[in-house]
Amino acid sequence: MVRKWQDILDRQRVLDDRILQKAINLVCDTYMGVTPEKLMSRCRTAEVALARHVAMYLVWQKCGYQLTAEKFERSKSTIEYAVQQIRNRIRLEGFQLPI
Image (cartoon, rainbow, N blue to C red; front, side, top):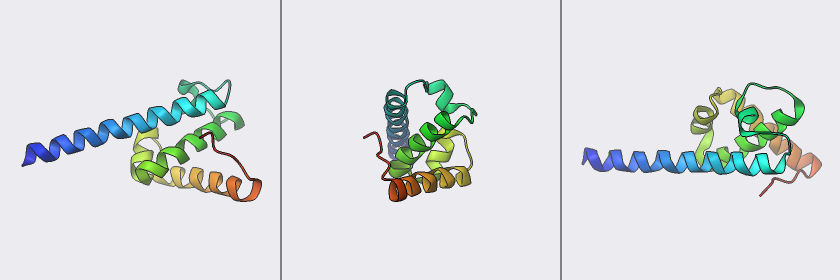
């Protein structure tokens, strides 16, 4: 029984990693000049921050706040801020997600 749960958790981690990688690739393809390394770094330029917020938003939609925070190595409040920023851009500016 314990082994079965361990298998389920292992499969979930693989799915979470795939979601993260897919979001990173999608965002980096959309925002030219933003590499996966820059996206995951602490770089705070406007272009990189926007791309990172979009990636966080996409991962958050599938994984929730806690897992997104773990994957991006940020605090949960940082993820909440990123999600709010993208929601506001969508609502107020008609911002289009790269999907």
